[in-house]
Length: 119
Image 1: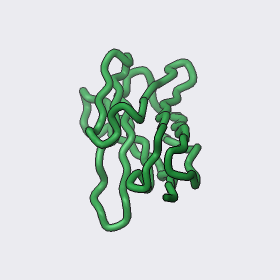
Image 2: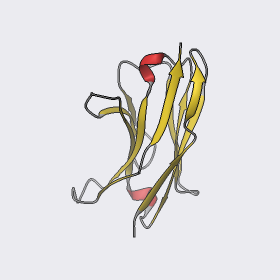
Image 3: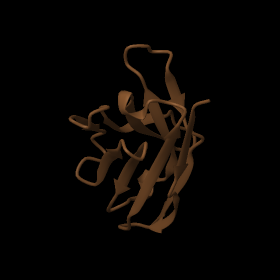
């Protein structure tokens, strides 16, 4: 059974930092592209950052470029999102996603972790 378990969310002041983690099980982690998405109240879920299975390529939403960094540790089956200089508009539930590109239905989500940034 595939499980993605996020952790590291919380309440932080504007300008602060948080590091999210997503631990995967039940998948061959090194074969999956990993992404972080977020969804704020009343808004659609949006892609925040993505990293390929080999970590050779990363992509970021324009709103987080220069502030957030995605990374992964295939030995620990874990993906991270380092978030610096947080802003109130970063407040959302953050979701981890695992996608196996050769088979699109192999697309899994975590339960989400709340990030709240106070001004």
